[in-house]
Image 1: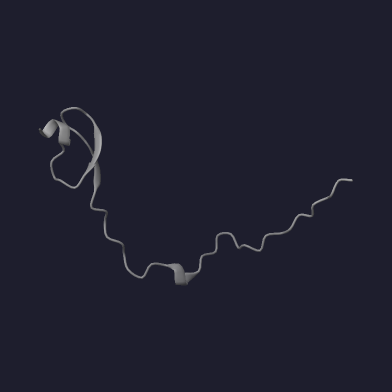
Image 2: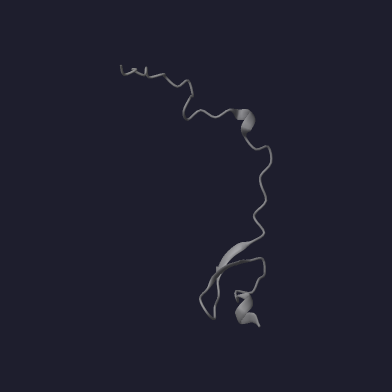
Length: 58
């Protein structure tokens, strides 16, 4: 005999978000930014103002 499964309806409300989960304070910007090296074209993350990767910097 094969058991027949009944479809159970989900009681989760889609698209509704509780206001108590909202952030009270704005989050600060991340310290690292993604940039492209001007010499070799490598994509890397840095917190420096220069757009040169560590390998090309040496």
